[in-house]
Image 1 (cartoon, helix red, strand yellow):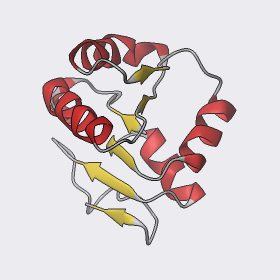
Image 2 (tube, helix red, strand yellow):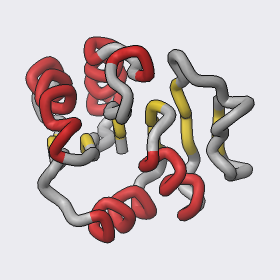
Image 3 (cartoon, helix red, strand yellow):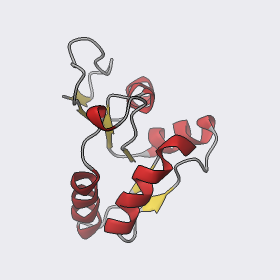
Image 4 (cartoon, helix red, strand yellow):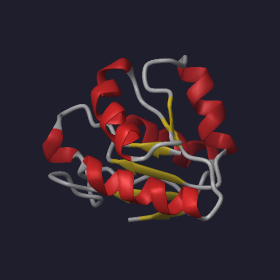
Length: 116
């Protein structure tokens, strides 16, 4: 599960082409990739989906409870410092959290299965 959105814009986001490269690498290893976020994240997930054909873009297309279920079922979550990162921590999904202008010292994922 890739969650590339961030409420405060590009300064908090890992670049789309980096997410797309990761998605392509994951799919080349036989893993499915789903892009999650709110409708506000649809432009960034759309960019990533265009650069990584085969990634499933569900930004703005799920209810929060559906996103929670998808994250809980994921083998790995990769996320910027965002609400969905904290959801992944809460459901015990291993996380790679990418920080830009914020610090993991202030808002870490509260999980023993996280990588900062």
